Length: 609
Image (cartoon, rainbow, N blue to C red; front, side, top):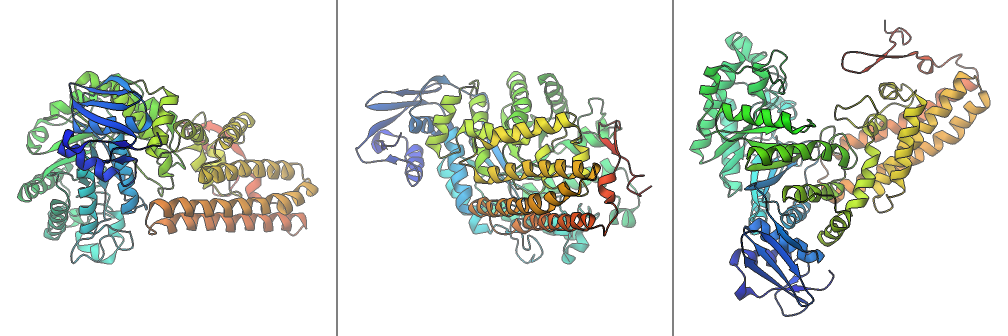
């Protein structure tokens, strides 16, 4: 809807007035009498009624009112929606290279509010500035206290609770790369439990977040602390049961939270890993000792995170298990973005939907989606927003399959069209034997053209697998005219497959004429596509994020270009007879699998064994 939606301030609740005034800076809401009248009426559920002269939003919560405002922008109605979740949110990863600009983070929060979300977490390992800690967040684009306060003020005006999501045990490897962190280090990624300097740093963390956000809740991490107590801690105290070390640390940190008026939550996996013989979070046979259960701090909430399982029954079991640990768990599902250049719709739908269904059935009240940036955060966040829109539809009880409606909402909220994002996600094609979260596109993109390790892991020596992947790339490219970054990535991936095909065939047949064509025609084309991809990567990155972190992906792209140039030189030398063979192209491929489904490489042929 292009014309203005006007509302009458005297007839509208103060909190909605405030939100609409903020949103009017970017959306066509206005308080002068023009365009279509927008009225808000309290009721038992969300209803949006659209007529020629007015749009009436009936709401029962602030988040429902904001969702109704989003529907009003799109001119779509609903005869009744509700959600069983009191908290429905999103965790934004600001630690895997990409730290969102404050302006872009605000635009994301506005869209979340208009979709019906009421919670936003900022996942910040060391990407916020602490006083007298120059090594903390060094060259990482860290937020200042004033910047987070600004985000909190903006989120609060839209009915969104902003929560810090930090780390107080593991996942500190970036900070621990600095010399000044040595006294706090147990292992290369885990804080030294029992060391007073550790708790002095944590106190500064809590002081920051207690001042930065209105919310008194804070996520203090503590996940994946593999090797806890095995480094400097063991040197100082000897080897002790991991449960004891963990319990002592978490008890002290939770006491500190109380001192700062904060209510903590943690990722729950360490309790399960320590009780599993396989050290597996999702081991349904894990046994957590009674004394450990009894030691869980009373002021602590547990977050059950699970982005992987395909059936509601598994989530049912884990939710019940968390309740036996004490208290009501929060659920952390996933919008699939990690190791990807764009949002992956299929992986999200296949896993988030059974999770939502289970949580509805089991009566879970707090639910949020994580959006991780593992491997460098090179996913274009603009493509993620339609996925969040789909997820909101499911959370509010809709099927999520109404593509025309989702396209209308996407346009009204200023998002990539939903159907285009879904088509673009086809570039995330999963090779048949792979289901470990890393997309085929990511493996192939960062694969060395000459070594071809990723090529073989993906079984791309198999013609049918190559054909399937090429088909998905070609069909996604056809829908990517408005997504230049994804288009550049898809074209580059397609060219990498075609070059490798031509090169291997020419080498196997000792076809010198074809070898000449590869280095004289395909290599220059490939370098041009790498440059195009690098340009589009920078464009989308700088539109969303601070400069810090961009360098790591640019180094990869530059390395890819240099290796492509080197490949051309190797092929020329072979053509001229300067080299009698190219050993990397004579690697014998072994199609057998190990117990995890990974393809073997014949290391004998590589001269490794």
